Length: 165
Image (cartoon, rainbow, N blue to C red; front, side):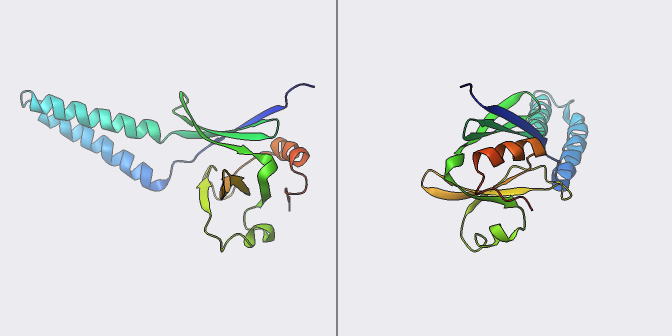
């Protein structure tokens, strides 16, 4: 029997506060060019400001990749479409429940002190699902945005835990 594999990529919307900071960084970079006539220090300060601005811009262009391999979900963070970082590996056999955000199935977990991680696009109109799962010896809450194909495949893996309203 072959290995089961599926993936889905979700582009994260840049939050408004990040856009404001990016605009301010561009203004600071332009204004810092006025320091260039100062020997040595001016060039170092401008180079440092431009470098830090580059790092900030790079780390705020984010996509989430959900990959299903057999009964394991891998979530990777892709920054600037070039750098990948593994954010989590979750054994779906340890799923408590997965349901749309705001669903009655999720309500009973609201009062618990769960670690919550948002792996969604941050676009309010998009349908988000909440996955409550054991990660090691603690229960965590993940906010995901799977497509219809991935939901169908999740239904095959965790039929009793997945609730689609």
